Length: 212
Image 1 (cartoon, rainbow, N blue to C red):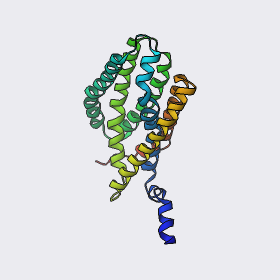
Image 2 (image 1 turned 120 degrees about the horizontal axis):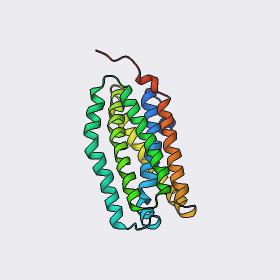
Image 3 (image 1 turned 90 degrees about the horizontal axis):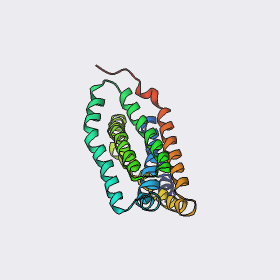
Image 4 (image 1 turned 120 degrees about the vertical axis):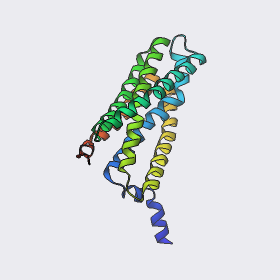
């Protein structure tokens, strides 16, 4: 019984420690970027638009979401093909690192939006950043998974990102209500930037010679 309790108390850390360093860092990095995107920003984005942007209403919320999704979906086939056409992983690394950095920048820019047109422009560029980030991150993560650990590592990734996003959603609501959206976006940008810096710590792992 004591052994069962010990193993249970170590879960999920006991599994996480077995993952290779690149997978661990990529999971930790994306925990922070997903917290910013799905925890801090997305749940309150409609409220921000309707309350803080002149002329913002529910129609604007829908159009802003559409612009982001169109920009992302129509661009990521081309960005994926470009990434695949370049041998090695350097391009993948800089695509996902640059993408996370752009998310941080856009979160800060939300503070200074004073028009619906400005919002739409930011949404367009956010979609472009996502078109580089998501395909390159997913491809890199899949390549670095440990053999016969793929299910566990993907499962751990989704578990940790979902739990952290849930916690961030509560925290984001408290911050936006008590301190305001400026503080919320600054925090989202800072957390996402830390995720970017974590990726930089393993950049040498992506600079290995490419097999013929």
